[in-house]
Length: 84
Image (cartoon, rainbow, N blue to C red; front, top):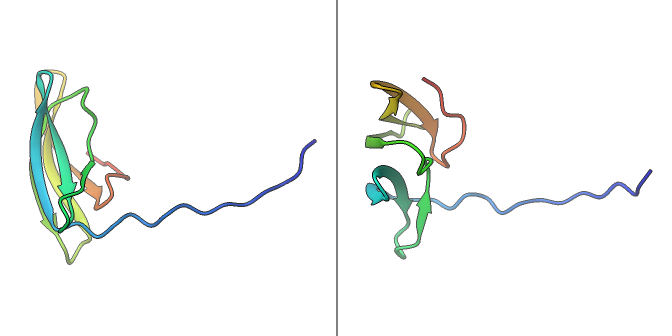
């Protein structure tokens, strides 16, 4: 038994730019704010590229490798909720 505690996390910052950076042999999607601070959105374990932001749907669409195939995925602006 232990004492129950609560905490909150900082809200993901508003980012304006999406870009792809090569890490090792993989392309990785990043977002950046106006100050230039960068946030990694996709895993560096697989290739992800061509991010496209849809402000109306509040999603980012992108292409990623899945084995030997390329599939279209969507994710939230903070990189969570990735769906094929």
